Length: 425
View 1: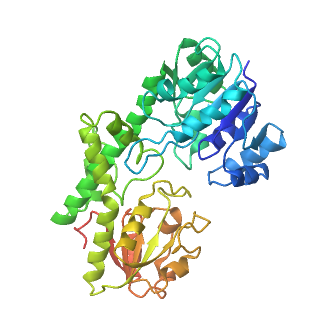
View 2: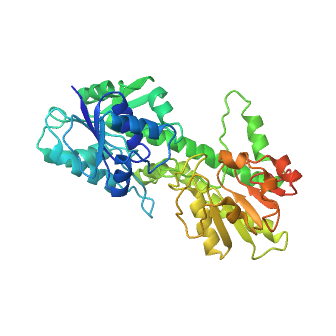
View 3: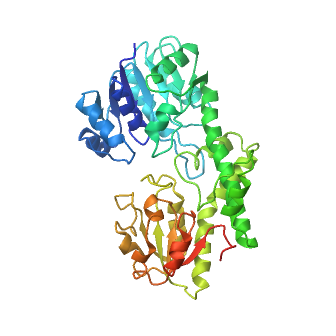
């Protein structure tokens, strides 16, 4: 009987997952090496932003079903949900997975189940986790059960998707898969599909690689449209009316802990075969510099060579505070390399993560020569441009997400540029 769960990693996936199980009546202990995060959680406060998380955390703690510390404890199930980033050379960094697995070895007992939720390169369970877990002295697959069940949620809708999305479960053997399926059936209403561990790892990487390639196609269309008098957003929308076409949307790059990272796992595993995947990654990684060069060109068309840029939007997607792999950070790096003056603002990022960041929108746009929109937060969509028209130095806006009401901004006297739209310039 699985009554107690130990979740290692209390980030954007681990903490909601831990709280979800606690809210269903299981005893859950969360572990994170970030002492500040643990302190905040035990005080019923959040170190991350996610809709519905705070009230669910408070409920779990008040019912004495959730605790957190920097050390694991004995449990029936161990869930590893730690980061799996890439190194500077684009190779997979599995140090967090390896260290998290090592941390539970002293606490694992016969009959336990270990689940890896982190998105990882195929064969990570076989080649990284199992060799570490063999140090428990337990017979793998008979006394200790192991599986991979990758998260398939998006920030901002984590709880909704944890419940309703289909889930992939890949055990090292049938019993591992069945135990994992029974555990997630506690809250998952979607279909739970069973396979082996390596296939489950491959499935998650495939999902994110598909989206990366699709976005790269959209970004190429945006670049082409910039040259031929076409609005790529309009063209993509019209193309998508075809029943078998579903093109994603362009932007200043691709961010997040999955889409910008996972395709590199396949490139590293089979560099001679993953050619289209590699090209898509290079295309999407080129967009921040493309965005900066477009910004420069817009300013120069007005005779401005040393203007101030208001960078608005730092999170990698709308209405969250997650800056992991955000293309905005690459845009800022290129601005710094070119010696351009800028300030940065994001309504959801509550702590200054950058030297040039301010917590006040008015301060960010003060005396700006161009407002550069990099994230389509709802606050920006709803923004009345008249509130900043007397604060900026030049009424120019470059919208890389096509999220602003162009007519409203034009009526307020702004010159509006949209990534991938040379039709309306």
